[in-house]
Image (cartoon, rainbow, N blue to C red; front, side, top):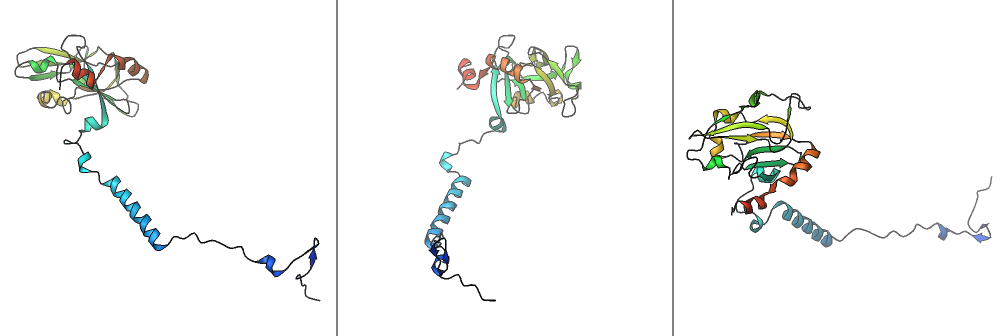
Length: 221
């Protein structure tokens, strides 16, 4: 059998030669070593800017956990004049309820001496909520009483929910350590945690003040 030889063969009236089978020219995409070093230095500089903040841009006092994770709202004169309360709302919807610094209780000499969660028809401190579905959580109105706070001159004040929702927790540490209200009412001295439904929160929010409005109302710096 004779070997096939395609060189010079006429196909479709054209002549095919070895030149037609040459590999296409591939351009090099690689960078020079100097260009690569420059890109690497730029990447390192960008990473350094992200990881190491400029000292001049940092606040003099680092933000607290409350400032970082919660949006503060206030309910001034809630139900009664001078009964100022705060509502710190987390991004997940949880609301921490407590006494604002301008509440009348802090104007009494001697400060708070007792906190009683046995108000209404039940002892709020005896409620135990369990599971992801918050079993046993009671649903309260915004004006429902959470506890009674007593000062050393025997004056008492009712602290209320401020928002309509499910009561998830009360701060029972206040029963044995009521002095937390005198020193850290905005942190460890909180009163309760409530979870409102999104629709209920949207109704309540317009009735609350933001921190700037609250400071302006109470003439705080």
